[in-house]
Length: 302
Length: 328
Image (cartoon, rainbow over all chains, first blue to last red; front, top):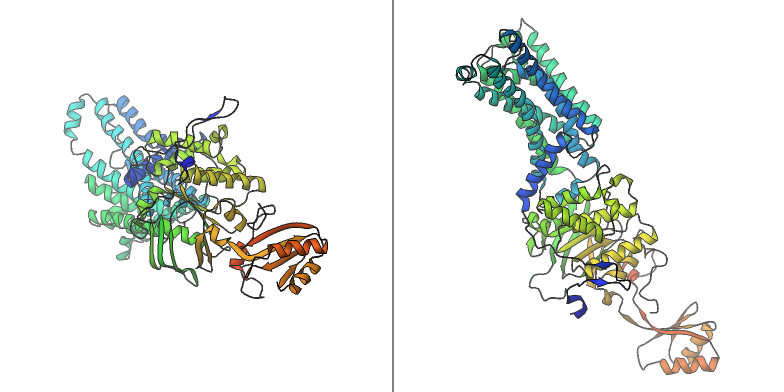
């Protein structure tokens, strides 16, 4: 219609000749769509979980907790190297009970950052008006937290596993003798991470307020743990042994012992439940929390 | 722009959106063809809801909506890849720089990392943010924040942008700049725009087409020119003596109304121009202007007779805004 508009926007030089405007240029490159956007959000979330791309201050807590999770493995390796591997206070099958609190604190610190920040700043409408949909967003954030948890759970385990081989006299023989370990290590890491990440994210997704989310995650976890332990400790009544299933920590602990084929703490021994019950209970916790997350994101106004 | 496209840019058919207790959109059927479209109505008229339904962010209760030929109910993701959206409310994280934030949003629209960074820098430059784009958004003025919101809506080079009250919270100078920017995006960038506003003065200055809604119902959708078409009334302004002029016109068989210094002459029948001129000369009046009157946009939202308007929140525009009826 208008010939002036249809001509390509050439360099428009001002009278001074020093400033020129290239004009608006259309984007003709690739548009990688929804799956790419979700993957990018996942990578962004995983970096943010460790404070990468954020201020130094926001790196302190996640990085610090990651280091703390490694400490028992390093100490154990040190002892093993000096004492010839006789002492084994830290073992592959009880490592998660040692770092379980670290994983919980990591989630309590990071999950509100991952999902509460966008709610607090009302950024969700910008996400949901792009290639992503609500479920993609929730899954990408969940994937980021789960991966962070897996790193915290599995890196120390494999450090301990491979380190134990290296400090021994014959690493090859050690690995041959412990070929059955990587399977339970991976299964335990996955179940533990899944449980804590889903429960923490479900609570964090419910509020834009960071303090409420962090407090809620810690409180819910410890209250459930305390309640489960309390009920399961009532010795004389038969049904109270099922109380262990109320405690998320005892549930994952039971599943881990089942994977490794080792016994448990006194309270797990007394409950004497089939090992796979703990795995089912952990998956039920994760599934229920997953439903809470998806429902929250399908309804949250944007 | 103006191409005869087979599918309209945006179309709705009997679109209805009900929330518990309120009908936000009521049986709206529309077809829009690009350019700069103004979506006007009072606060709560359903403008934001319409934009959200078009984006596929909010499902319609009944009826259909298409954007770029895609069904908003089932192809929302594909629509959103080609459409930009600037929400009304504040939606920026305070602790990130605009450059990083807009880059991230470009990736969320599907742009590869390098392209996202380049487009973010370029788009921020187009909206007038230069070195400050590396500073945290928390320290920005309202005007700068509105520009960042606009940039994130443009960064993936959409075919259409939906702007919800883009001048909200801006001072008069900032509002001018934002309107000029929007006008450039529509004309120079060649991006179709739907701009929701409760300020008629803004809409009529930059829009080619106007959609008026009230209480969720479509009042009218038409090119701006039709809204402000010439009326069948001639406006004669005299410095004083408008009463005498009106009387003289009545005696000459041309009934006229007075509004202060204005005399409004009905244009039905033979042209009254010579008569007006002669009477002004005969009465020795000082003539300020003679002009064929135009419809005022505000008339759209005015109740037919007498009553006070029930759309009290609708504003004609900021003081100093030009009215369509002003003499060019």
